[in-house]
Length: 194
Image 1 (tube, one colour):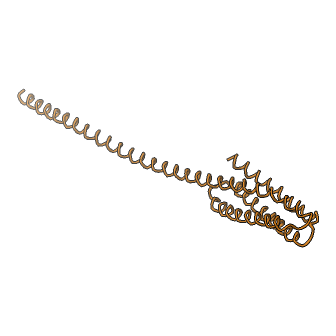
Image 2 (spheres, rainbow, N blue to C red; image 1 turned 180 degrees about the vertical axis):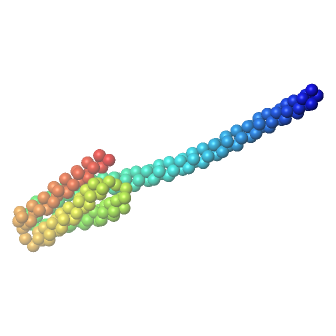
């Protein structure tokens, strides 16, 4: 019996030690697992936070560039409509004969529109990546029609220096004027849709 008692005491002591070691091992493993999970979660969270911040910044940049384009387009169109409305005055004046003052004023407006159109064209090209394709094409169509109208106007202006203008010379300039105002309306509507 003595042997059995000693065996049981040894086994019991060993089991006690094993239980203590298992509890310590369990707490170490729990801490290790929790630390790894927290580290992995923090890394993933940091990674996705950085990704979200980058996407947000990129979207803000796109919106900022798009808004700059909208401001440029609005300024260009408001100036353009006002300037274009001044053109018929010249043609109604010069049908009674050539008038140098009105000619110079109209020529000056034409040059101003040409300069503004060049600036607007640069802004269209710069904003191409940031604005929708249909807005881009509408903007280019406006500039294209404007250049054609200016060509018609300048031809009519030069003819007015030499002779009274026949209706077939004045009408294309007025038709182009109407097309430009319509193009401005289209572009303005596309901007409002956005």
